[in-house]
Length: 268
Image 1 (tube, rainbow, N blue to C red):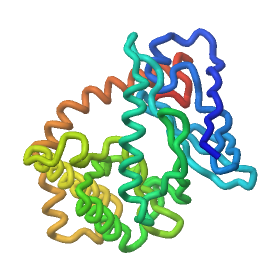
Image 2 (cartoon, helix red, strand yellow; image 1 turned 90 degrees about the horizontal axis):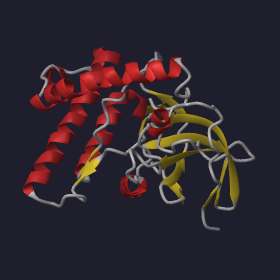
Image 3 (tube, rainbow, N blue to C red; image 1 turned 180 degrees about the vertical axis):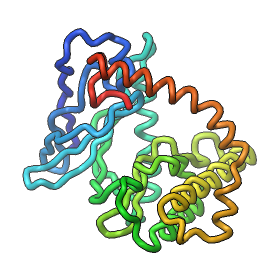
Image 4 (cartoon, one colour; image 1 turned 135 degrees about the vertical axis):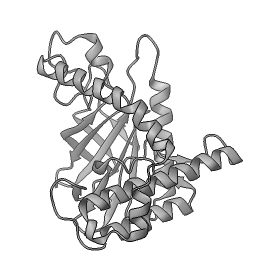
């Protein structure tokens, strides 16, 4: 049975300015109430994220088995069609999941849903750093996982976000959300792209060690401490550019939510 996506329903709030919905990947629509693939129907349980590029939600089947649906942008922005961007991001992220499908620390993709969406397995566990203890050896396993990605010419890129690193109920690290991961596919296997890839792989390790320094400083080696205490020019530049942007973004979205102009499950 081919994957089928039920139509998402328009959001219910009236009078929300167009600019607020423009920041949502699906515009005035929410994630679909149901999806079906593999002969099963899954019902929407919770939208966990809905930002400019994608909406992500949990779905359960009739037995309570949970999966994760991620739908890329389909809504136009300032008159420019963005469904092509959504399709490209979807194909790109599915490529990373496929390249890592043999690793137990990366959930497998189960189906493509519509032109910009896909479903992957749900990972029982919790995001890193939500106040819970981190078991011994967790970061060593995470380092081994990143080393395997790097061996396959992939940079995860998003290790600075602890919510993308899951501490599974099995006690192991799991990675989700490969939307901005990087490899040699898009721009070719040339010296410049290889250099960019190596730089991003080094940043993977740096941000991972930052989490280790914060959550398990007792396991940080002298070599790792030297690495994490040295801030590269690339990170300094990123902070210089991104901090003002995210500060303005957080304030804007906080105001929109407080005044009812952006739904609580809107852009984050």
